[in-house]
Length: 293
Ligand SMILES: Nc1ncnc2c1ncn2[C@@H]1O[C@H](COP(=O)(O)OP(=O)(O)OP(=O)(O)O)[C@@H](O)[C@H]1O
Ligand SMILES: [Mg+2]
Image 1: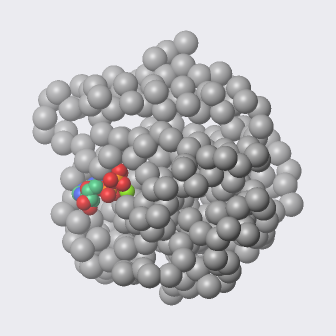
Image 2 (image 1 turned 90 degrees about the vertical axis):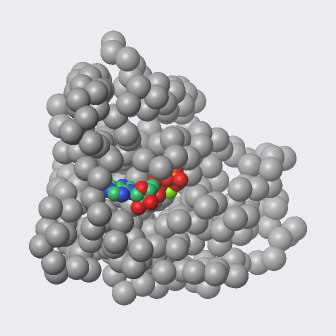
């Protein structure tokens, strides 16, 4: 077994009634591109005709901001999750899901808020399995009957929020910076995923892609680090489990400053980025087709 050893993390072929699938962009390291990738992949999937919900599970609420939800005063995913827990419901103000979902032109949003940082504490005393709160919430509200894909942006931690995301997700996408620190971080990440598999309370999500990001191939060390990590990941997760690297791209920064996806621009500066996100969306569609139909 290689450095990123885990047992059999790939989910089995299964038939399921709900049409939708949950994708999550995760890495406990900050600033690796989780939000950027989640947002643009959601738009790439929408451009292919899929109905997509962006679910912001990070208290920093960066995805909510990118989706245009500024100065959110109303209830967020936090209240919905708390409300979905029978024993906590009477203690909190009611929040209706249809009042919280923000309908977008291309993708919808379930926004986050600062209060989500208190999630772990809020659910500390409950008797139901705390790692399944998000999964149960999605099922209770039949969101996978409505959406083809729910795209989750995770926080840069490995706490209860991320465990909930791992338990609710069918597919994981892992952006990373190719350096020695991220190699260690990824190894820890897979330990947590392995623990979830050992608990056996839910299907383990399939790791769909590792996405090298902010790569500077002009720096020799970075090229070497990327090659080594790529080799180790492919040994464990199979050839093709690491996507083409994203380099540092000014157009990506510009699109985010304007709260737009790379598909909102016609200029040729965006073609390469659009192609890269199309490839990720294509990989996701192919996996869904092969695994669930
Ligand atoms: N390929 C890229 N080229 C240029 N800038 C990028 C690229 N990818 C991400 N960025 C920028 O890097 C910063 C961090 O990206 P992002 O917010 O997506 O990371 P994150 O993993 O979600 O961070 P956090 O862990 O804090 O949530 C952002 O300012 C984003 O615009
Ligand atoms: Mg983020």
